[in-house]
Length: 521
Image (cartoon, rainbow, N blue to C red; front, top):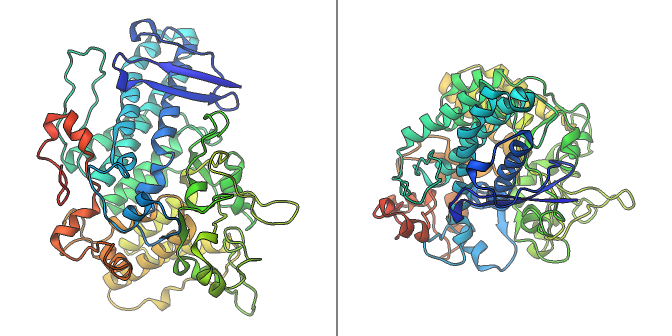
């Protein structure tokens, strides 16, 4: 059953339209209701929250992959689309019809505007305890703060400082143009939203498609890691309770195919392709398209450890992520995987395995209903391990790495005695071990690009900064030839950030002259 939810916030570009499933949010339609006549009861509150989550889904449907994965070393081009070639080759532009979908932040700010409206309206429902539902409204208000913080965090990582727009726009005579904030101001905003959320949000560990307390502390850990605030990241991750590692390797697949039943999942983006008008979430189109070429393939070097991991005393491959992600019937060896035609490679991490033939059941782009993880337990624990390494708690960091490995069947441990040198040298070496395990564990989940960007000297867009990103990406981009742009000059270092879309700049006079260099407006 479909439920169409349309919540008008006066201005057309702040319209939230969506489709919610009975299995997720079962609410009656709300149609063309002005703000003053809305938020009268619990039913209105639920419908509005459904609109926020639908808007979040639209914002991240494809962008979670384009923003967080494509420009990393995880993927290679497989299709022939002009847009994907430009992105993977680091040839972005602010005024390019091929790229407007990923450089335009309008959907992101539409969702922020809905969060703003909830943040203004829910306190009144709480104070009046409408329909005796104060606890629910407090939870929903906390969700609005958390989702706004998450969206600002995406904006910060993709574009740098962006406008902070927390006003509720209900009148065309209100201020509609806002300047770019500084990175410091964005950080204050994000952490403030997180603090407001943790004070009131619910603590359910079973509501996987709504952000809850665990998801907020996952976000807080991620934010502190972005700013290399390692003690704060460790403290935030201490609050992640009620989740646990899988207990056998076969359960790893369920994290992606049945997230609502996994103790490792924290917050997933709900998707049902039928209820979304026969539009699937983009991961199938990107990595595992049925019936046509996927846009990208996973780079052989990334999955090489899957093929090369053997438990001591055996000759049998031991890391279950190999056969739970890659068709080992077609590609039993790394060489066969690496030399296969790019347009034939599919990545099955997010796909069910057929009980009939044991092969991956790939979906068409229209039918793809993958519920992509936004945060999960292993993700946060590996962030914690990295923070522990950087604060010289080496054995604790390696214990997490070994737990991540052993739960998927690989029992060869990372041993502290193998790391030598000064404390700082050991810290960096163990951090690299953690980063490789993050890459193996989280490939395809929109994490790798951000991992590359937050290591070393950040916010220095010269050849003095982003040493880890340059170390990883420059050889890859250089090998792609003249069509690709490496981070090999101060000017090209600016390409770490996305350009601000020209339409966005033209609509906001306070952004004119504020484009990210080297892009033109």
